[in-house]
Image (cartoon, rainbow, N blue to C red):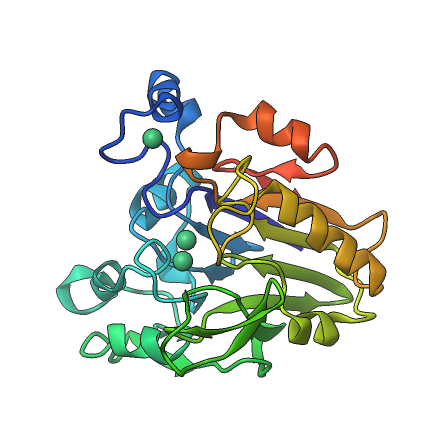
Length: 285
Ligand SMILES: [Zn+2]
Ligand SMILES: [Zn+2]
Ligand SMILES: [Zn+2]
């Protein structure tokens, strides 16, 4: 399996749209080399993960052909992971698709379905996923696990346990376990540390690649609902202790914010045994 990282920043990008902080100015000075676009990835050039506002530019930069892709897994409906208006360009006079089948199916939670309402049809379909459900998609076995993300303490919806506490979520956010021919990928963006239910599900299932949210970067556990380098290390240890990882498992830190990202070297120093994702990085495992 191959995982290609198309975008490796949090919602506002690096450099962030309107930001003049030190990290953003440094990234701006580096031009293309400093850019981290909004989250997205593709497995084996076939299975798209998330479709955010930078999908157009990512298509150009990586020589992708979205007409030839038929399945998109959406992690959650935050605007950096789902740009419904961009997906709508698959329809009508906006796209003359020759490749069969013409239909692209978007998988996600109920909120994703709501955001795609009025945009689906002959070329674009929505199929709901729920937590701990498994589907066969493009020859992969895909399981939606629960993400500790979109957290709130007041709304009585979609409970999840995280940092030793019960939370509710404004939507049923997912991380995805993707399996094929004995290989396993865990794509965990956006999320806080893995929930006890996720860890139970993953017990004894050895993962080959684990991609972890690192939005907090060098800031120790600042924002709940995301991880930083400290929690990336904790999750690695959690997975090792339940037999879901071993010394051969590749760990990647990804989804960075300018608020906790002084630079790649600073993150690498905190996570010496991790790959630090960048736009265009491909990992084969
Ligand atoms: Zn995000
Ligand atoms: Zn900034
Ligand atoms: Zn998010």
